[in-house]
Amino acid sequence: MNSKLNSKILFLFIFWCPAFLFAQDAEKALEDIKNLKKVKPIKVTGGFNASAVGYGVNGIASRRAPFAYALNANATVTLFGKVSVPFAINYTNSGITKSGDPLAVLYSILNKTGASPKYKWVTIHVGDRALDFSKYSYSGVRWFGGGVELAPTNGLVKLAMFYGRLNRRTIGDTINGTPIAPAYLRKGFGTKVELGKSKHNVSLILFHAEDDYYPGDIINTKFGISPKENLVLGLKTKNQITKKLDLMVEYTASALTLDKRNLNFEQTGGYNYFNNLKGFFTPLNSTTFNNAYNVIANYKEKYWTVGINYLRVDPTYASLGVLTAKNDIQAYTLNTNTSLFQNKVLLAANVGTEKNNLQNNLAQTMRRYIGSFNVTYTIINNLVLNLNYTNFNHSTSPSVITKKDSVKLVQINQSRGGTLNYSWGKSEFKHSAMMAVTFQESNDIKEFINYQVLQTNKVSNISGSYTVNNQPWQASGTAAILYNQIEAPNVKTISIGPSISLNKKMLEKKLNLVYTTAYLNNTDIAAKSTTLTNKISATYKVNKHHAIKLETSLIKKNTIEGQGQTFSEYQGKIGYDFVF
Image (cartoon, rainbow, N blue to C red):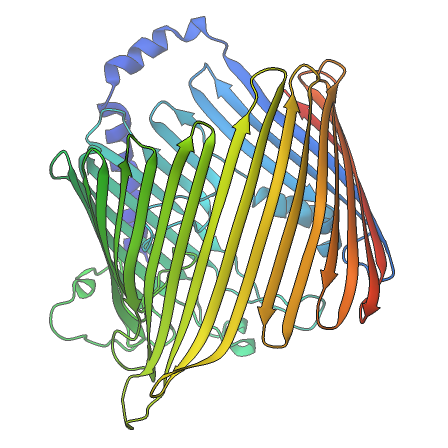
């Protein structure tokens, strides 16, 4: 990262942060200083958890290690009742297996540890942290460094900033042990400034990430990856136009250089604001420029609401600050909900369409039609019926038609279901019963003259349960039955069976015992089998600080007819919790 860019980042931190820190709530801060003597200077809260798991199996190969353990600790240090510093450390025996070097393990732990001390509306981020600016600019990518969030309760301006390492440099290894993916050292920074309040506000977003590259890097010679640079500019605004109508508009522009090694500059022609950000970003001939738009409008009345959503993301849109972002999409959706008969009937619907191939340069264009409907009906007190229907259609057709009999493929996914819940009892015993039904179906259709079904997949689920609870006895029990059927080409499986769960608290609620058993009869084209599962757990709370948990489970599968394996699989777990 060049010196001009570093100087601008330093300017942002040095001059913006103090202005927010000391210009707002100054009188209130002085009053808090006077009251420091009345509060405890240091308070530490948190917890520690240790667990160990033993595993064994007969009849098949092991599906996990025979022994594993985990240690987890978290703590929050509060200074003078105002400044909070939380942190957490997680460690398992897999760390020893991977490195074997205690110093390397310690280094790995430190690089995955962070703290976010908070004082009123000021939050400082240090170490391994992540923020969320917007869906298409920066969201969720973790960094190791420093940041600050300033969010005055009644202020008109809010600020969030960070600078840190996004990726650690890794040479990569495909020979020894598990393959390790190579990566350049990537650093980045971001800032988000929000002006206004909840009803009317606008946010300005800037995110920049750059890979550290030098000629002759061994990463280039051994692997086919390239060093990248990315600058993202975002604008997001929310406005409550009237008491009933609100509007959200979001626009994000991303300039992504796919390979920094080729330094030839390409003038994009015409006006491009990325060409005027010298010191922040210089476009090269491998730089792509893409945009993302999202507009959401909602209108609310007393008993009904209607909303529209428009989304468009360019085909090659990408941001190094976003974990996953769907691109090459244009979508329109309409949603509405209403209540009838004094809220006894609730109706909701969502319909829309989306397509890809926005530049019309792909061999095929996919269109997707969306429709979902939901009805909730309170028949009488404590008796509620819910019905739902969902229909998702995918159609794929050639972008360039060359024959009259060109093929068009359509996939229709439908889901229908309902639940019925009833509860009764007001004395010692309270009861509830539930029945649920779900049918899912997907059809692949070939359109020539008439639709021809190529493939159909069906899934059916039917379940029912009854629960009784006795408060004086501190006991409860649930009996259920499940039916599941899957149908596909050359596949048909049916599973049916009951399950029972019992819960009992003892020793003045310090000991909680849970027992669960389930039995399934499985049938498919190749075999018939049964599966029996038993699980017992016990949790004992010694006091408000200490708790011990024991858990054991056994799975037995027996093949009655046809192909399949008969096996027994068991697991035991012990855990200890400490809270302070």
